[in-house]
Amino acid sequence: MKKYLYASLLAGVVLFSACSDDRDSNPTVQQPDSFELNMPALGGNTYDLENTTSINLTYKQPDYGYTAPVTYYVQVSLNNTWNDATSAEADDATYVELDGSMNECEFPAAAVQINKAIMKLGDYTDESLLPSDPMTLYVRMKANLYSGYECFSNVLELSVRPYFMALIAADPELWYLIGGCIGDGSWGSEIGKAVMPMSPVEGFKYDESTGQGELVYSGYFLSSQGFKIVKVPGAWDEQWGGENNDITKPYKKDAAGEGGDFKVPADGYYLITLNTKSNTLSIVKTDAPKYSYDHLFISGDFNGWATDVQLTPINTVEGVINHNWRFELDATGGDTTAKFLYDGWTPNWGGSEFPFGFGVNGGANIPVAAGNYVVVFNDIDGYYHFFSK
Figure 1 (tube, rainbow, N blue to C red):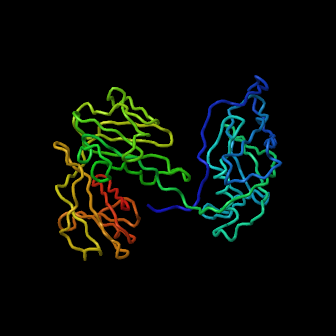
Figure 2 (cartoon, rainbow, N blue to C red):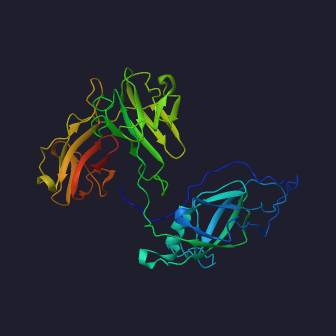
Figure 3 (cartoon, rainbow, N blue to C red):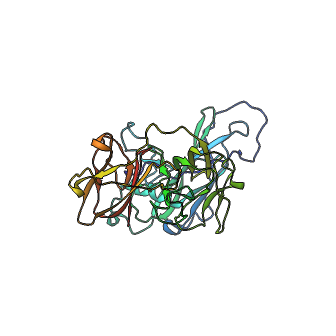
C-alpha cells in the first residue's frame, strides 16, 4: 500500500475527567488569556528522545470561570514561532500539533512523536543534516472548550537530542483468521493455506507509529467449525476468541494459552470488523457478494501476459464458498507487473500499490518489485498482498 509522508503524529487517548481543582459553581463562561504549563521534573536536563518513552506535561486548567470539560493539545516548534500554514494545500506551518488530545491536566507526549515533529520541522531528510548537539524545543499547550473558547499556555524551552528517522507511516498492523473453516481447515501457520489475512480498510487513517487501526474480513463460515483471530501466524500469545464460542462475546487474550473459539450461529456470510487500536471486535451476519468465481487467473509481464495461469483456491473446506486465492510468484529475475482476472479479462483487477493494495476492475498493472512471493487475493473487496517468501 502506498506509504504516506508524515501528516500527523501521536494518536492520543481521550479521557473524560476534567481537572480536579474546582473553581466555582457559577456556569458563566469567561475567556482566559492563557494558562500555566509546568516545567517537567526533568526539564532542566537533555531528553535523549531515542531512549525516552514520553515527556510528561502537566498544567492548570484555564480559568473559564468553572471546572470545564476542556480538551488539551500539545504543540511544538523549533524557533518559538507559531504560524499556521498559509493555505490548506501548503506545508509551511512553523509548528506541529501532536495528533491526539487529553481531557485531564496531564499529557504524556510520546518521545517518538516529538522526534517525528522535529524531523518534519527541521526538514531532516538525511541523517547527515541532523545536528550532533542537543537542540532547543519549544513546547506549549492549546486548550479548547466545547463551546469554542481557545487559549494557549506559556511556552517551555526543553533541551532534546533527536535521532534520525524517515518520515514514512507504518504499514497497517495485520491480524489473521485461522480455524476449521479457514483455508484448508488445518489450523496450521502458513499464510494463504491455513491462515488468511484480514483486509485493511481503504482510506482509513492508521496510527502512523504502530499501524494500528481497523481491519475487516467478509466470508462464508460454517456453524460446525470454530475459528480464531491471531496477530502472528503460528503463535497464540495474542488472539481473539469468543466466550463459549459466542460471536457476540469476543475477548482478546494477550498471554500464551488457549481460549475459546468463535462459532457462527448458522452457516452463511459474516463480516468481521477488528480495530487493533481500540481493541474492539464485532462479527455480524452480512449479505452474500454479488459474484462468486469457480476459478481466477493471474497475468503480467512475468508470464508474458498469459491468460491461462490459474490461482489456487484457499478456502477448500467442504461446504465453504471460496473467495480467497493464492499464487506463488517467482520474480527473482527482476521487477515485473501483475493483474488478476476472470475469463476474457471480464472482470480484471489491478492497482498501483505494492506490496499490498486494493484491486479494481480495469485498474493499473500492479508494480511488483523483484522477489519471491506468496500472493493472496480476495475477490470480495479486491484486497491483494504480496507476502515475501
